[in-house]
Amino acid sequence: MSEPLRLGIAGLGTVGGALLELLARNGGLLAERAGRELAVTAVSARSRERDRGVDLARFRWYDDPLALAADPEIDLVVELIGGADGPALALCRAALAAGKPVVTANKALLARHGAELARLAEANRVTIGFEAAVAGGIPIVKTLREALAGNRISRVYGILNGTCNYILTTMRETGRSFDAVLAEAQELGYAEADPSFDIDGIDTAHKLALLAALAFGCPPNFAAVYTEGIRHVSPLDIAFASDMGYRIKLLGVARVTDHGLEQRVHPSMVRIGTPISQVEGVFNAVVAEGDQVDGTLYSGRGAGGGPTASAVVADIADFAKGARPPVFTVPSAALRPLPAAPMEHHYGAYYFRLMVLDKPGVIADVAAALRDENISMESMIQRGRAEGEGEAVPVVIMTHETQEAQIQRALARIAELDAVVEQPRLIRIVDL
Ligand SMILES: NC(=O)c1ccc[n+]([C@@H]2O[C@H](COP(=O)([O-])OP(=O)(O)OC[C@H]3O[C@@H](n4cnc5c(N)ncnc54)[C@H](OP(=O)(O)O)[C@@H]3O)[C@@H](O)[C@H]2O)c1
Image (cartoon, rainbow, N blue to C red; front, top):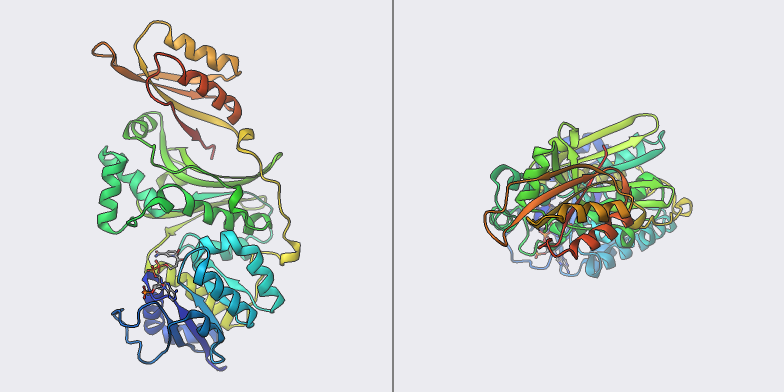
């Protein structure tokens, strides 16, 4: 067997702790598979005193993760600190500049600085592994980079945030409000104390930018992702969706259109019966559509210490065997920036719900606003009758395919109608 691969691990939280445990438990198996021992040499975290349930005495300790990157007895640096900038970015730059490969679970960092770090890695003849950064335990990075190499990918999409999927699933199963289910998810540890990264779609957008880079050979362009979270999804919309044969999921979708690369994250209506509609609770799933394989689906646990550490270890084992794949499928010089397709050009079908006062003529006014924008209705449902004066009833409309700009103009006009008492709720229907 070759010399051990000496690892420096920065960040010993949920993922870093699970990584130490995994290496201890499956070390023998991994050494056989990697052809050499994976030996943790040094670690770094903020607090040396914090009990992590693991004996750290056998590892060299660094308060400063940059010193860990500089340690000549470390061959590979594992970054599990988190955050798009700050110490995680400084650590990755220092490790790569020192000619050490980096393995990270940090999607925020790579979505923003991925292209720069990939160039730095190549200039120093090393690479970056980020299997753990997208959909945790699902091996989608290697799949896009290697297993589907023979395909032109036309679209990649998925449920990339377990917190959102748990909230939407539980809202449907219990009929409870978004706020109530979010509070419960926080108690159960499925949602952070500050849940905005998850529920506002930012985490999904980070991951989508990385999937798009892998699938389409472009630098990650997080700034170009249209992002809308799930705060406004109501139990009423979920119930209407079910009645009409749909589930509501927070999807990230990337595809190349005539207008450029469309990257969007938003609550989406997906037909019940499609594989993605059946992915429930904290589970994630990714669908990659290629010209040779057609649609392929990958699903599993998208977060948590064990699944994420499993992905970290897969990269470490690859690098231990000498693999040095380009970070984003092709060498940096071959990455081609794609123009961002503006959301106004998005073409698809729409669901929208109005709360209207039951007055004569209101439906005719809504229909006129749609007609003037050339939008044709597929169906309309009005539920119940107002019980008393001033009480609003829901009216739900599904449209045929149309352009985002047209539906937005029509909804702006509809929102101005006297009889429409709340901001219209719009959910895009995703054709799968
Ligand atoms: N948790 C998941 O399920 C999951 C899934 C996929 C990807 N990820 C990604 O994995 C990364 C780590 O996530 P996590 O959930 O494990 O985070 P976490 O539990 O908050 O752990 C972060 C660790 O980084 C350490 N740290 C913070 N600032 C530091 C600094 N300046 N120098 C050295 N160490 C520092 C902390 O030290 P102390 O312990 O001393 O505070 C802690 O050990 C993030 O990029 C996250 O997005 C997480």
